Length: 80
Image 1 (tube, helix red, strand yellow):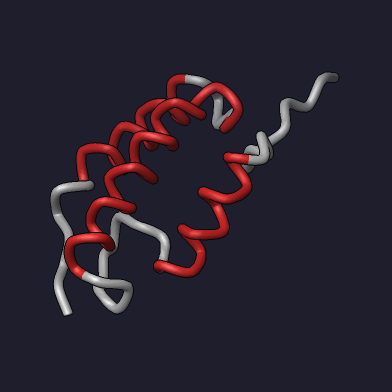
Image 2 (cartoon, rainbow, N blue to C red):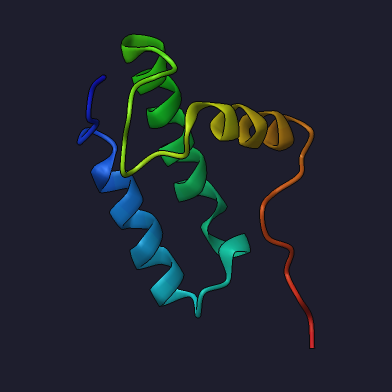
């Protein structure tokens, strides 16, 4: 198994974006997509059993990517 540090900057960018936007995930979709792309490349190179503290587990990443293709994002903007 392998540990991934190449995606760490993307994971940190998500945290920064969330902090800057009051934890509104819908404003951070682009940086989340960048992390998922990095993680997809990591699993393609290292295999689905690889480990990463920065990436969702392989099966969850597959689900997240499928949802994004269907235009379903993790967070919905809540209007008050």
